[in-house]
Image (cartoon, rainbow, N blue to C red; front, side, top):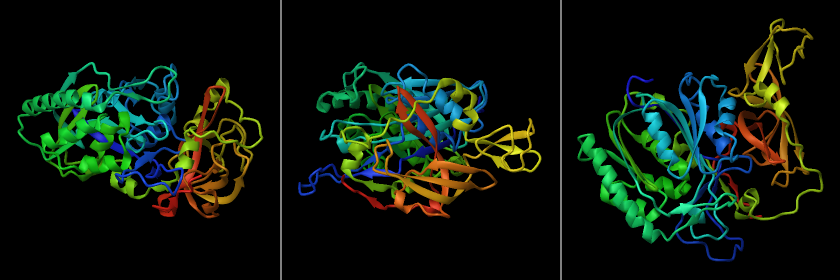
Length: 470
C-alpha cells in the first residue's frame, strides 16, 4: 500500500478518430454547435482502450492489489473482461482482476485507486441511435490510474447517493435510454453542490485552483461549473470528445493534471446517479507521473472521420461485405497455451545465437537449435519497421480493404500483422510502426484479440482528413 493516499501515475487514451459531422446528405445544413466526439476504431473496445492506457503505467502493479476495469460497455456480459486486460499487460497472477459496471463506476474506481488498494482503467465506447440529439455529445476514451502520491495527494473525498432514473439500458439493448435532462439536472446539481462543499470543508479549503466537473447530464455539468467557479477548461475538452461515460471523470482529471503545477489544488466532481467529490493537491512528481502523451496532444493528432464510415464501424449501417466465410473463432485450449504470444506478444530468444523467433517455438528459427534454451522476450513495446506490405480487398472487417504488413522488430523478431489507424495506401516499406492491442474479429460470440501495428508518432500524419462519408 502506498505511503499516502493519492495518485502515483496516470495516463489517458483517446482513439485516433474524431467525428464532427453527422450528415449523410452533404447538402443538408450542418448541425449547429461545433461539437466533435471521440470515436474508437472498428477494432477497439473497452478492453483494448484499457490496455492502451494501462500499458504506460501499470507494469509494476504489485501482487495483492486489484486491477479494476470500470465500464458500461464491457465486451462480455458474464466473463470478467478485466482478465483479458490483466493477461495483455502481463501482470503478476496475484493481482486480482475485477470489472466495475454502471455509470458511477468511474468515480468508484478512482476512489479505490486513491485509497491505495487498486490500479484502475476507466474505459467506455458510447453509442446512440443515428440522428439522436446527443449523437455528437457522446464519445469514446480511456484513462488509467495507479495509487500513490507522486502525481497528486488526496486531501478529502465525499459522496452522495441518489436513486435517479437518468440513463439506463436493459440487458440485450445496445443504446442507453435517457430521461428528460431538465428533470434530472436539478437533482444532480443539488447533490453535486452538497458533495463538493462537504469535501472542501473536510479539506479546510474555501477555493481551489482547478474545478473539474463530469456529469452524464450536460445541463447539470454547466450549472455546477458555474456555481463552483470553474474556468471551463474541462468543458473545452468535453466539447472535443463528448461525454465519455465511465471514462469521463478520469479523462478530465488527466487533462487537469497535465496542465497543473505542483502545489495546486483540484476539485474533481462527478455528478452521475448522485455525486462523488475528490479534493487533490498536485504532487512534485506530477510531470514524471504521466504515461504517454497529454490529452491535448492526443486531441491535436486525431483524424477526422466520415459519418458513413462511423456507422459501418458501429454496425449501425448494414452493408454487404465480401462473399467469403466468416473468420474462424479461436479455441480456448490454444488461447491458454499460447497466452504469452497472443496476449503479451512474447517471442523466444535463442541462448545459442541470440536471435528472436516469432511466434515462439522450441526450435530457433535462425540457427535451428532445439531444446529448452530459449527465453521469452516481449515485443509489445518495441518499434517495428515494415519490410513488405499487401492490401486485402476481401476482408471480413467493416472496411473495404486493410493493409497486412511484415515488419522487423527493433532488437530482433519479425511480425506479420494487420495495420491499423492508417489508410492502407499510406503504409510503406520502411515505415516505423508500434504494436497496439486490438480486436481482430468476433465469431461464435468469442472475441479474438491480438496485436496490430499502427504508425509510430514520427510516421503518423496528425490531423489527416479521412472523412470519406461512405
